[in-house]
Image (cartoon, rainbow, N blue to C red):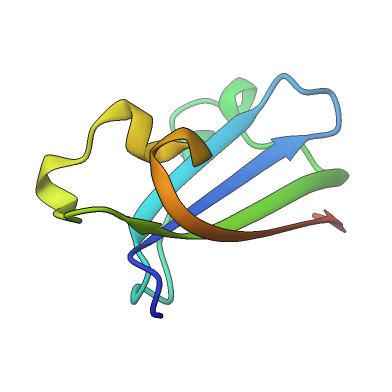
Length: 88
């Protein structure tokens, strides 16, 4: 059974910075905006990051009609998740 949806969450060690990236499961790369180019105060902090990723099956999946509940396991019919730490 192939996954429909990828949900990736990246959280800084302080918990102050948090990105949630949602994409169809076949997408293999995304480009995040460089907020540090707008203002150094907005730049993503260096150091430890907590990263979690889930691949999910969504009933009647249509990416253009995702609902908020489709972004969590409450709306998934099957999923696999993993989490790890990385340093940036």
